Length: 198
Image (cartoon, rainbow, N blue to C red; front, side):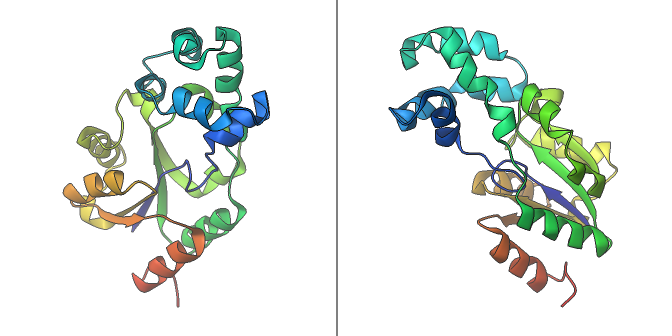
């Protein structure tokens, strides 16, 4: 079977408030994270259609910060994406059990370029990243792109993502879905579905 993983909040950490705090300190970190990352511009960065420099300029009005300070926060994102050791253990176990593993992520160029230095990619047979294909979850086309690119059959795949909407979109195409909350419950569900040896 093919198991397809989301990256942010599944394989690697994604904590916008902590990113803002690391650059600016605790003051207004929640509000700043909301204004920067919960905005259509950030989605366009993930889609690969907006540069970090342009986003930093465009965000000045809503953050009240100069472009250089917005950019410093945005440029702190890649190094904040730290692999979860418990998930890496699970990935290695699944790979050892004979499953082929793939990644399907909404992520900008700078973040995926940074993440590619990590050793965990040796367990993956391929990846599809939104910025590189100009498509995003939960749009059906990005799931179809993954299936076609790696010659996968929907019914022989399981997709793991922390977003219920992204999982539902995969299921609508006949791909099995599992909403991720934490590693222990994910492991338990994979065990009950027969993906892991008992």
